[in-house]
Length: 114
Image 1 (spheres, helix red, strand yellow):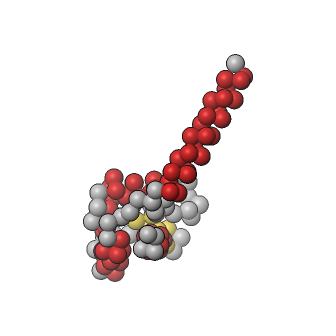
Image 2 (cartoon, rainbow, N blue to C red):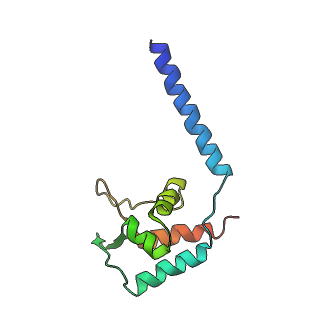
Image 3 (cartoon, rainbow, N blue to C red):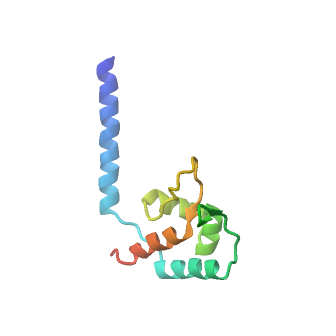
C-alpha cells in the first residue's frame, strides 16, 4: 500500500514537471498587448473606476481589470493561469486584487516575447 502512494505522488510530480516544460515551450500570446496596456493606463489615469488602496498601492479586482483591458474575466483568469500577470503579494491572506502598476509592468514584458 505504501508503494502505491509513493508511485501516485511521483506520477503527480512528473505531470507537474511536464506541464511546466510545455508552458515554457508554448508561449501563448495576448492579442495586441500594447492596446491592452494603453486601455488600462487610460482608464487608470482618468479614474474611470474606483480603486481600493491597500498599503499605499492602488488595487484592482479581476472584473474591473477585465473591463479596463477590454477582455472577459475568463481571459484575465487565463492570463493569470499562464503566468502573464499575478495577484499582489502584500501579505493579506486570501488576497483577491491585482496591483495596477504591477499588471502594466508584467504585460509590458510580453511585448518583448516573440
